[in-house]
Amino acid sequence: MEPAAAPHPRLPRNLWVVTATSFLTDVSSEMLTNLLPLFLANVLGVRTAVIGLIEGLAETTASLLKVFSGWFSDRLGRRKGLAVLGYGLSALSKPFLYFASSWGWVLGVRFADRVGKGLRTAPRDALVADSVDGRQRGLAFGLHRAGDTAGAFFGLLIALTVLVVTQGGTATLERPTFQTIVLLSLIPALLAVAVLAFGAREVARPAQQKERLSLRLSGFDRRFLAFLGIVVLFTLGNSSDAFLILRAQDVGLSVAGVLGMMMTFNLVYALVASPAGALSDRLGRRRLLAAGWLVYAGVYLGFARLTAGWQAWSCMAVYGIYYGLTEGAARAFVADLVPPERRGTAYGVYHAAVGLAAFPASLLAGILWQGLGSWSGFGPAAPFLFGGGVALLAALLLARLPMHPSKAV
Image (cartoon, rainbow, N blue to C red; front, side, top):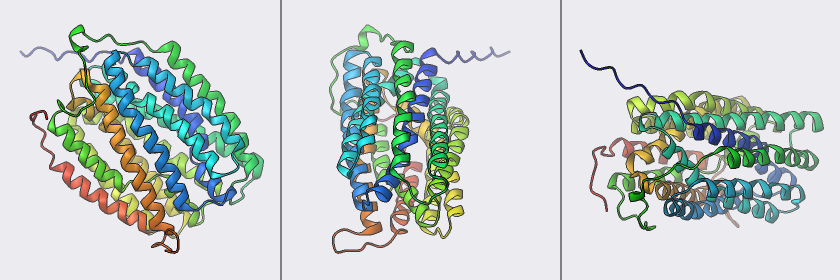
């Protein structure tokens, strides 16, 4: 008679604290993030190429810092302090949106917010990976993404309520409404910092793992580096979700409709993320990621052919399935491919690769849509056709990624 399998340990305190922090942060952030492209376009009259530039520069800033903060957390052997600092900086940057009178103001706030995200993301993900048993890694990251996304749902619900109360069902966003939402967003943002600061605990690392670590990619498994390359390719077609929002408004959705659409997206994402993460523990991360990228390709090709607002809403619901399948699985996959003592650096490199590729992706999407200078561009379908095609290619390459361990470089 075979011995019974060892029971899975209980999910640790740190996972629940980090999940609560992400929930509150996304309540705050999503009250604003999905309205920012509408604020730029409707209130400030900014063109899509400039919106792409703002998003690209903001994400690039975060990306460069993620490498440093992840590596620094490895060197220190501590994750919590950098994460708290990052969440705090993002919270303190939000009030300045209240005074935004030009796209330069918005760029400055997005820059500061992304500096905070750059400081916190890699140490936070490493803290989760350090805290959980490897058999539950997919479930843990899936739960974290579900909590994060549930916060986005409630943040959008609050924003929609304010929108309906202050300006009814008008088709465009007005400045006073946006300013009210900015002020309300400060409450959950500050609560998030307090929860992490007082609730999280450092995870001790063995003394032999605290050797001097470099920022170089040497020592990483070739599978991890190959995965990074494929992720970069995929991200070049994955422009900012601001373009999905603008596309939905382009085919007739009101501001309230856009918020309702994004609530649907986040609800689907939250419902899919946890079971998908657990499924990755059983079936493997690569299969789930490839399936998610195929869903993404279908969604983007669908956005290219939109003719009505309800179609955008439906595509965005399916987009939530893509996020649920991939976000937690990708983070767990990184931890699978690297040694524990280099997790912070690995998460920093991973997030940096995604963020750096997001800059040309968003800029290119804006140019393909609306052109640059005297060139008028190819129209609103172009960035989505491009993104769908790139996703299909990336999914094919990921399916061919070898899964046996290989030599480090």
